[in-house]
Amino acid sequence: MIDAFDQYLLVTGGAGFIGSCFLENWVIKFSNIHFTCIDKLNYVSDHSTKYISNLLKLPNFKFVQKDIAVEYEYLCGLLVEDYENNRITGIINFAAESSVDRSFSSPLDFTQNNITSSHNLFECARLLLEKHPEVRNKFKFLHVSTDEVYGEQALREHVAECSNLKPTNPYAATKAAIDLIAQSYIYSFHLPITIIRSNNVYGPNQNKEKLIPMVLDKLKQYENQLKAKEPITEKITIHGNGTNKRTYIHVQDLITAIELLWMKMDDDLESDSQKVLTQTYNIGTTYEIDNLSLVKYICDIYFAQRLSSLDVDYNSLITFVKDRNYNDSRYALNFDKMTELGWKPSIKMTDGIKQLVANLDS
Ligand SMILES: NC(=O)c1ccc[n+]([C@@H]2O[C@H](COP(=O)([O-])OP(=O)(O)OC[C@H]3O[C@@H](n4cnc5c(N)ncnc54)[C@H](O)[C@@H]3O)[C@@H](O)[C@H]2O)c1
Ligand SMILES: C[C@H]1O[C@H](OP(=O)(O)OP(=O)(O)OC[C@H]2O[C@@H](n3ccc(=O)[nH]c3=O)[C@H](O)[C@@H]2O)[C@H](O)[C@@H](O)C1=O
Image 1 (cartoon, protein in one colour):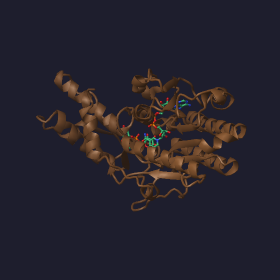
Image 2 (spheres, rainbow, N blue to C red):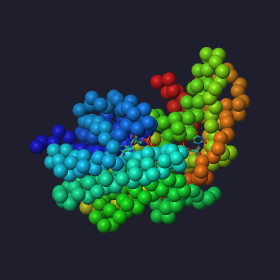
Image 3 (cartoon, rainbow, N blue to C red):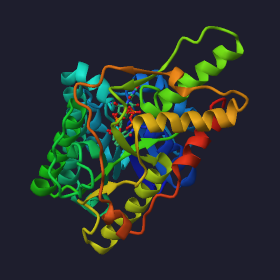
Image 4 (cartoon, helix red, strand yellow):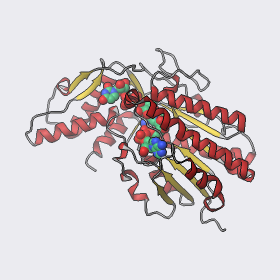
């Protein structure tokens, strides 16, 4: 069979926030690579392919709506039994239920979904390399984890990839569990899984349950109600007293990091080494800010860009609500390993937020 494409990749969770931004970038940029995206289409994309709609007709893209937590047989067929037809030798795993808030109310669903979906992928990858050992010299697996697996850091503390995993919420615990299962597959089956753990990611296509898109959505509603001379109904909701801090990375900077690692994995395969394959990488920035300051920062940009004539006391737009069961105080990553590979974040938070405000009507 003559391969129409140089590589065949499986991307899971590609209809969601980061996955869709990744696919929007890579499917267009790498026309020599074929991408199969599997996503169950949950609430984050309104149970639709709206974030990847312009990819659906491209020759190097295929979308499959499946729940990889329950479709083990399908995955096995795609990756192992029908390898000769599908020839998938690269997996990038974004798929997960990603909301900390939702994990407090349905922890078992998070365990069932997040752990089983990723473990199904690891097991299929193991079986593929067992059945087709010749694939090992071109097989890559990038698993997307999170900084939350480390739990919170004290002031001036930074965690490196070798730091202990101390998750505090059910979502983070599922992500930590997956990382530990991945580690067992690396040791026991020499499966070349590379893991990335990033700070909070922001950018287009992010569901408005998360802080930044929530603030933008509330401000847009405020603007619409103001123009329609309707009563202002919605307020920006801040958990607790707003002093919790987060560190932010623009989704494009994360994608650049993924691309660098993917190339370094190719170098490893060509030189039969494992400098990057089987490694874990923190992907972070130094843009740390407390939640209340971030909300006011976004308001500053929003009003300057869209409502410059108004002089509004932002406190009137904000309401403080009950805090999370547990709310990590801050995450601070040591990302020297990525720096040593030549990566650094390039999108300033000001520019990233301004870009989001400017694109609100698109
Ligand atoms: N957003 C962040 O700030 C952030 C930071 C660090 C790590 N992460 C990780 O990055 C990945 C993507 O995060 P996101 O913010 O884009 O999430 P998201 O919630 O926006 O998208 C996740 C996608 O995965 C899909 N999915 C979930 N379970 C699935 C299953 N069993 N089968 C098929 N599809 C499934 C969902 O339908 C959704 O489209 C997740 O693994 C998350 O843990 C996110
Ligand atoms: C690395 C993880 O980032 C995201 O998780 P996180 O909980 O940090 O993101 P959120 O945007 O949900 O919350 C950030 C911060 O804001 C508070 N907050 C949120 C929503 C709201 O309406 N009001 C708030 O005050 C919240 O308590 C937090 O302190 C990502 O979702 C996850 O997948 C990651 O891996």
